[in-house]
Amino acid sequence: MQLEALANETNWFGPGSRIIITTEDQELLEQHDINNTYHVDFPTNEEARKIFCRYAFRRSLAPYGFEKLVERVIELCGNLPLGLRVMGSTLRGKREDDWEGLLRSL
Image 1 (cartoon, rainbow, N blue to C red):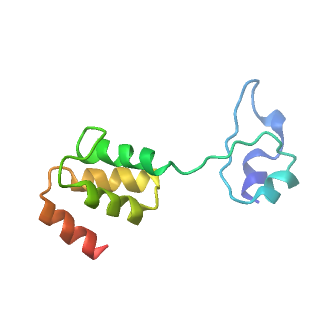
Image 2: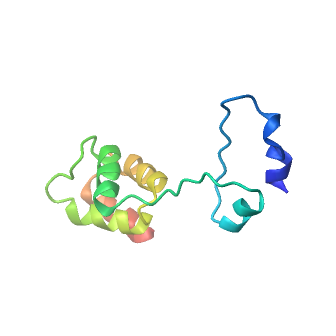
């Protein structure tokens, strides 16, 4: 119903318009004759590590002593980019003990 309310007919939009739909329901897209799809995967572990480290340390690699903690965060976030960014920003500038406490509570 939401899709029909927002974009029932393509002539509602001007030339060159892009309509972006996010769903896990491939059948829904097929029912509306949507053929041009792009599947987005989760980042790899290496990409997830870089995303997190950029926000936590403002560089691509974890400093010495934080490697295992970074792996725990990545596992907790399930490689979700927004989760990695939020956790990185939350942990930025904190001591190793602070990380341990936060990770235990999660």
